[in-house]
Amino acid sequence: MSAPAAIRIRSVSKHYGALRALHELSLDVMPGEFFGLLGPNGAGKTTLISVMAGLARPTSGSIEIMGHDVGSDYRRARRQLGVVPQELVFDPFFTVRELLRIQSGYFGLARNDAWIDEILGHLDLLPKADANMRALSGGMKRRVLVAQALVHRPPVIVLDEPTAGVDVELRHGLWQFIRKLNRDGHTIVLTTHYLEEAQALCGRIAMLKNGRIVALDSTKALLRRFATHSLRLRLSNPDVGVALGGVAEDEGGWLVFGFDAMADVETLLRRLREAGAGVEEMTLGEPELEQVFMELMQHA
Image 1 (cartoon, rainbow, N blue to C red):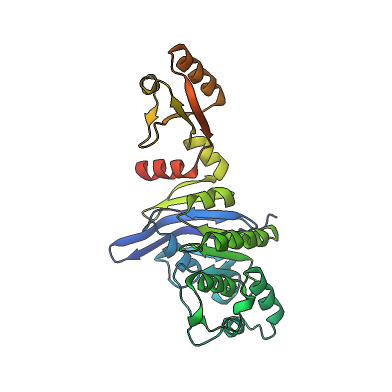
Image 2: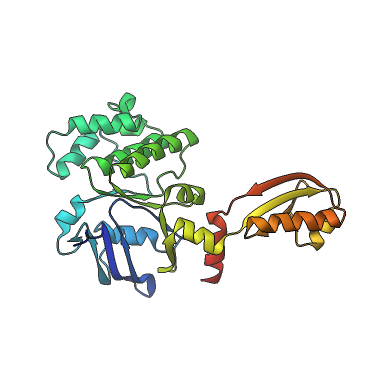
């Protein structure tokens, strides 16, 4: 018998009056996956996370976390889930360590200091462990939100825009830690507007628009299906390049050519050479998730 899905979503709809935030949405996230949930603002990502966490009730449909229904078996379902919210929500009257101890108490964990110290170390929060939450920078507060989500050792972790407004150094350190959690067996669900993050981290991606899934596949398959390679050239005779299908960039005199197979590059360079356009500079670009996202959102 195969293992149950870490997250099982079946025909979930959520209506706010006439607004349909989610419409008949179904998908499975398997144990150990690093899964991306992408979409423009208003696509329904945060609403779906709220329903998963039990903060909102679906109009119809069901969600299970590690086999536990979030409605009928709420306590067990909530214990399996750690959510890092998009908003910076915190209690200003406690230190970082006190806040994590209180969070542990919500889940009945009375002696959790060893794990709290381990989390603080991984997130570089130990120097701030006894600082009041009000004294922390925005980036430090976001680290504390991550620590709160992990304090009860949930097998499923949902990250809703975890690096929004975070500096590059913190972003790099945070992803190192999250990758380690995923290697250790945790299921990770990520929403982000930084599509390069999703491309680098997520093995599978669902794209949402207007509360519906418009694409669901592995990251590699989405890139193969929708994105093209790009060849940027600076030519001695740019007019020849434009005539052969190159698109001029706004600055620098570069032309961009899209192609699907490496053999197309050889053909293009030969045609440019025969037309008398010498290549002065050249760069080769890999397919990008942003191309896929823009195309799907335009045509969904």
